[in-house]
Length: 91
Image (cartoon, rainbow, N blue to C red):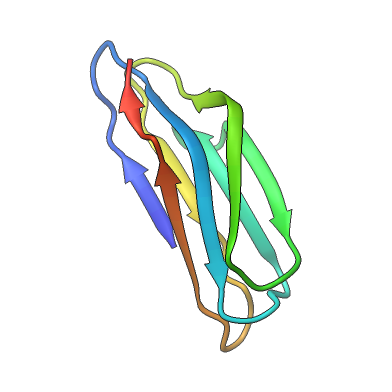
């Protein structure tokens, strides 16, 4: 599952939390937030089925003019997953 917020000239993407869920315990569960492609703002392994939630006391933000990509990695054979961003805004 992937959420992509396209780059906006002169503005950066910010999120205040993440929600995730796997249909069963994942074998390779991982949630990432990337600033562009390859620069991680957040990376956390997930070892059990969902749902789950993280609230960021200090919101996670990217670089102005850069896309933000949120990914819930494949959980393994026959395991599906979902990811959602909370409190998305531009600044």
